[in-house]
Image 1 (cartoon, rainbow, N blue to C red):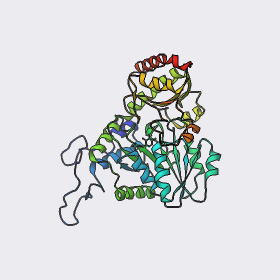
Image 2 (cartoon, protein in one colour):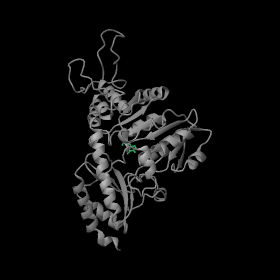
Image 3 (tube, helix red, strand yellow):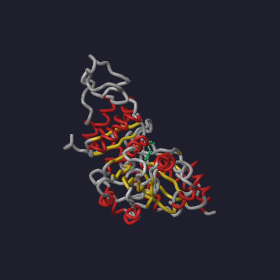
Length: 388
Ligand SMILES: *Cc1c(COP(=O)(O)O)cnc(C)c1O
């Protein structure tokens, strides 16, 4: 599989015909336990939390997407995040990018701080800021790139060069996916995913994964997966696996549509800012070209006018559902300050640029013309409010 290209791996890795029946598609092994042929005699399957064939097939597939050796699948992206953080102990320190998925921030600040871990939030676009945050206790660097919701980039290779022996670099690759970006090849130790998003891609399942080439880290994550039990059920593993087969074709269309929308928005006078790494105006456009194989389907923008216009706009769009989450085939609109990032204190939020007039789009794979027309109509319909 390793020598094959992306979609071939996505469709074939871990997807051997079922040994019992020849079923072409990996069955949903909906079982909690396995009958043993004699005491101590079984085929490596003993209990469903520890191992399940459908989950193993998914893990094999997701590792292959990354050209990696090891993958553990989880019940959610947060469960995958927790598994990576379980490699640390009380007293350890983590350097984190300050533009962060709200749930990750909540988990770090409200759960793990109570367990004796400490966190420094820095703008990882500045390597000096990252270096300055390192302490003798630093064990982990946690980066998101592109970030949510401002689409800032972190130079993964540069970050990897700061890392010292005994320190790990984890990259939340949920936005780009392995199709557009290869954190492990760039020097990261672990790639973390909310498979809920692009990998499953149909907004019908919650899941997560942690992928690595480092055996010791893989074993620690696997141990935690069984010990804490945040596993995906067989049905969920199947749904993620089915989605992942079409990741490449979907990502190409997400990327195509998002570029068109970013250009459309950037050309409007009533839009104050557009955050999209594919725009030459993005401060890290050159890095995006170097580090990514495309720019993805996520973008955010700031509407001109008072917050009341932003709220009116959110009611006006028809094809974009006002919803949290991202990465599905259907387009979504989100107001980060009141939705995904609501758990971040207001002052922190505003300082980071997550203001009341910021909107985030998860651009789906509908036809580009229809999406642009929908946004255009909603912008025009709320134009009068912009002048106030
Ligand atoms: C959604 C998301 C998560 C959390 O994943 P869940 O599957 O919702 O637990 C983590 N990181 C990013 C960037 C996300 O978008």
